[in-house]
Image (cartoon, rainbow, N blue to C red; front, side, top):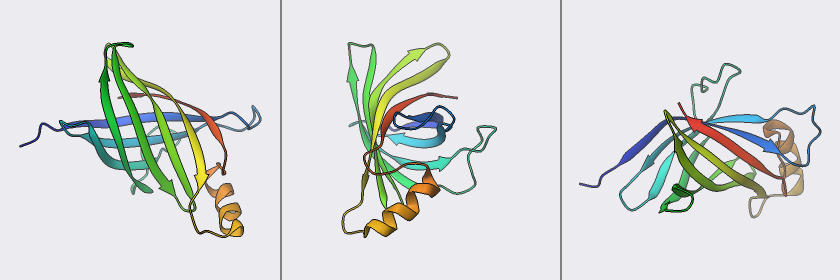
Length: 141
């Protein structure tokens, strides 16, 4: 049986670079499973104002984790969708007692085969649009 690690309660602040300071960062909540080969699967939820996840995930998550000696931690990449948009998040994790932290960047792209009107309608719902980039920071709680 594969050694599987569960990262429960992982919150990440998604801070867009091309938005005004008045626009808030979006907080996402991840439930991730990492097998002994570094394959990641799981779910992503929008987080409520108190940091608690909404009842249902808005997307499944896939990704990879690769141990690294420098920096001390792991390289990690995640991908998920939200309607007409693809999200790609990559960075590194490190342990700072008592939490595992994440620092990385993300990019948003439109999904193939969707009309521009579909993409535009969705941008306002998820506070992100094609070509958006930004930082993602978070920790396991």
